[in-house]
Structure formats: structure tokens, C-alpha cells
Length: 356
Image (cartoon, rainbow, N blue to C red; front, top):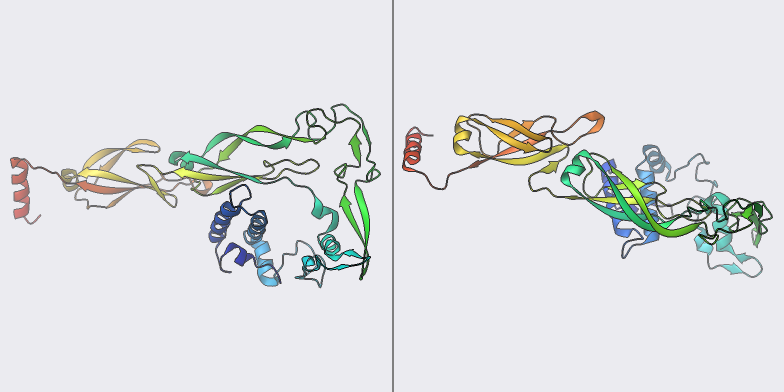
């Protein structure tokens, strides 16, 4: 049965891009392997589904054919085997032919390319104030993770040491293996683990990493937070995750949590705030100094303004695409006096007589 990417993300087939993105963020945060109760297998499924459904071309191919071709023949890399699951043969063993699950897994995984080593993805949470989420900022964080050895630059060899031919693969960087099955003999090719596919190994190992090419330590990472980011959104930093010898590093996922502001809130690209206005200014009009994220501005209160009426200040909201910005929306709150003087009471009585 073909993989149902919509079911994996828990969305309908007609879901919008935003719905796809929100579903991915929610599930990725829940199942990330670095979190308590995380599930690496589930996380990879979620990520695969997102990569397909967030890309218009791949999604169209998937909706039409149930597969994403990526240049292969219709029906997948090996025509006629769509939906074939090699794991179905995992426990099926015939004496003298080896484990068929291993054979089919290697045959249908695409050989060497599918076995490229990759480090683990890692995730962190970054808490920022509301203002930084609006205008963007840059933060430096110190992360403890597996990094490429700085002494040998990840080679595992002593700096300046010569290279010698790898004895495991005889300098070819690949290992060919023949496996027999009832369908015949299959030849599989895998990357040599001793030389990581390079065909040669250092004559002397690095003393800093003991030849591993990686070591665990702290690294300071600079994270650029773009303007207009919302709480819960995730920034992906490619190859900033865990390093692995002979392969590429995983990714770093940064979840942004925005501290709610006591004055400002957000509605799309607009910023909302309340402004307390005296009754007399609401009736006769006035002018107020208002503190915004861009600094203090002067706001005119129209004569006869109503409670909860909105004053719109254009271009003082959240930055959007192409340099545009949303608006600042000021909700007018009319404050009523608690105690009236005799003179004020008389004035109000006069207004009452006039039907105001």
C-alpha cells in the first residue's frame, strides 16, 4: 500500500499550504527524537510527508499518481513494484539463500546512494520578546553536540599524515557483495565504512579525536530570526546538527516561543493595542501621545468617537513581504470618572436635558 502523506500529517487532501505547515510544526515538535517521548521513525515519516506536500510540483505528482517520480520511471525507481514492501520478507529465510529482507531492502533502496551517512537532527527552543518577533533579531546560543574534529577537520588522521590505501575495500571506496536468493544472485554495493568511501585512510590517526573524525563539545551558533515570525514556528539550520565521520551533519531545528507583550498583540500582520481616552476627549476630540514599537507618535482622537472604535495607523504593524508592513490598530477605551464634582455633575445634567 502506498504511503498516505495526508494521513501521516492528519490533514485533508485539500489542505492549504499553511495547514500543511501548521500540522508539520505540531507533529515535529511532538515526536522529535530529542524530546521526551519522541519517536525517530515517526519524525522521519512526518518530515518526508512535509517535504512532499509543501512542494507544489511534488504534491501534484503525488495527488495524480500516488508517487513522486524525481526523474524515475512512472511507478517509482523500479517500474512495476509500486507499493512493494521489502520488510514483508524480513523474517523469511531460506537455507543457503540468506535473509531475503536484507536483499530486497538493499536492492530497492537504491544501493550506495541510499546508504550515505548522516548525523542526527537536533532541536532547541528559543524564547524571544514580542518586539524581536516583529522586527527580527540575531541570537547566539551555546550548544553541546557532536562536531567535526577541529584538529583534523573531520578526516580522523593526524595533520600532515600521508594517506594509504584502505585494506578493507582495496582502495575502491565501495564493497561489492553477492547474495543468493530463490530469484537468483544479487550484487549489492555499499560504501566502505573503514574509509567512508574515500578509498584511502590516514597512516596516522588524529590524537584529538582518536581517529574518529568527530568529538563532542560546545559550539556557539548564530541564529538569525527573520522579521514577522510567530510563536511556534520553526527555523531549520541545514547541517548544524550532529556531525558523523564520513558523512554530513544533521540539521538544527529552532522552535521560536514569543513572550506575550502586556500592551501589544498580533492579528496577522497587524499589531493591536488599547488606548484609554477620557470621556471629555471622546466627546470633544483631543490628541494623545502613544508609545508604539517604532517609538512615540501623536494620535488625534476624533470628536464624538465611540467606545471600542478602531484607529488605524498605517505602516506601523508587522513587516511583510517586499518591505511592506501591516498596520497598528488602536482600540479606543473610554474611561468614565468615578466621582463627579458638583460642577461636573451639573454639566452632565445639562447634557442629559439635551438628550445627550
